[in-house]
Image (cartoon, rainbow, N blue to C red; front, side):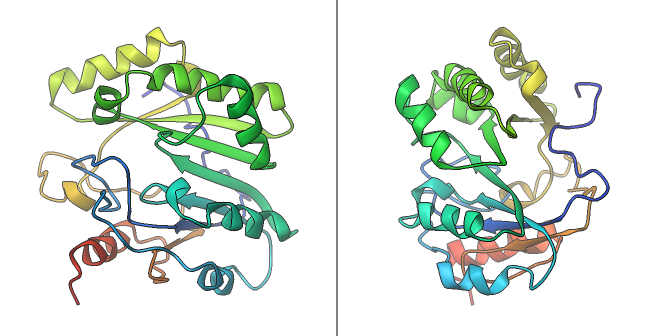
Length: 241
């Protein structure tokens, strides 16, 4: 929607990426969550399970997601797992930012601890914005801190909009613009999977890359199948067999 390729776009030659959902627990409850996560989630990925799922050979990237990955009690051990493997070319963190420090010094130290190369993807939508009016300021602070740290650190604002609702979430788009974050934003419409699987007017997920694998908190692996992964997360949340 910005008229350019999305930030973190999978260009040719990008290593295989492991998308590891550390948990289905989240401190927010976005009603369309694509990974069927909520405060009721109580599944937590085992560190050794992820070790076994790292590709046996070749370069790879590790994306820590959820649920809210920073809530995992062993979050920093997962960071260390990626950093300890010389084949891991980049660590990616997807977060709603709730637990990130809000003072400049502590935030910079927290981000620096993640190491490099690094991409931080901060979620931004109407649900999060309504519950955290300080989210735009946090996004600016994270962007600026990563820029100051330099050395292959990238900030991405993951903006998700509801098609056909509130003028396509015009207020969310305007909040991004007011904060001066358009250059850092990947702006997409929400898609029809996860908790939004019943939204018939929304588009289905359309992966643009296939060199990745999706790992759920129970250690299940779904290759690049976004819908199957989401249904697996739904079963975890509902405790279905």
